[in-house]
Length: 286
View 1 (cartoon, rainbow, N blue to C red):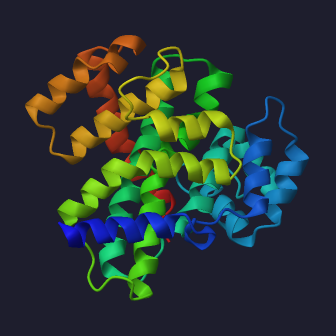
View 2 (view 1 turned 180 degrees about the vertical axis):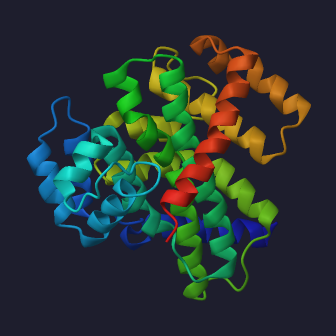
C-alpha cells in the first residue's frame, strides 16, 4: 500500500510540472481557433496549413485518397480545402496535430497510449456521425463533435506522459501494475484533462467536457457534453466485448434518454463507429 501511495504522490507531483504537459504548438492552436469560428477566414486557414509541412502533406494525401478523390488530383492546399470542406479539414488538422503526442519508444507506455488513441479516435468519429444522425445543431454541436470526442480523455495522456518521465528519471523503479494504472487514470484523468485543455487555452466547452464526461452531476442542457458522454459509454462497451449488461446500461442511460436515442439507434451508431475506424485507419496510415 505504501508503495502505491508513493507512486501516486510522485505522479501527481510530476503532472504539476510544465514539462509534463503534452505540447500544443501555437500555429496549431491558432488553426483550431480559426476553423471553429462561426465565419472562418479561409485564406488564414490556408496559410496556417501551408506553414506546417507535415499537415500540408497529410491533407493533400487524404484529399487524393480513394475516399475523397475526384476526377483530377489536387496539388494545392486551397484545392484540398474546397474538396474536403472546412469541417473535414478541421477533423484532419485535429488528428494530425494531436497524433504526435501519442508517440513513444517505451513499450509499456506505448501499449497504453495506443489503446487511448484508438479510444479517442473512436469517440471522435462516433460523435460526428451521431450528431448528424440525431440532427443536432450544426454550429454548436456537429462542427465541434470530432474535436470534443478526440480530446475528452487528454487527462489520461497527461498522466501517461508524466509516468513515462518519472520512470525515465529513475524516480520509480518499476511501472505500476495495469490494475493500479487503470485506477490512477480513472481517478485523476478528468481533473488533469480539465487543467491540460485550459493550459492549451482551448474554448471552455472542451475543457468542461474533459472534466464532466464521467461526472454524476452534469449540465443536462449541454448537448455536446451529453453526446460525448453517450459515445464514450458506447465505445467502452465495444472495447469490453459488448456484454449484455453493458449494452443494457447504455440503452437505459440518462444520456440516451436526453438525446432520444433508441436501442436501434445505438446499434446503428456502433456499426458506424466500426466502419469509421476502418476508414480513418486507412486514411491516416503512414
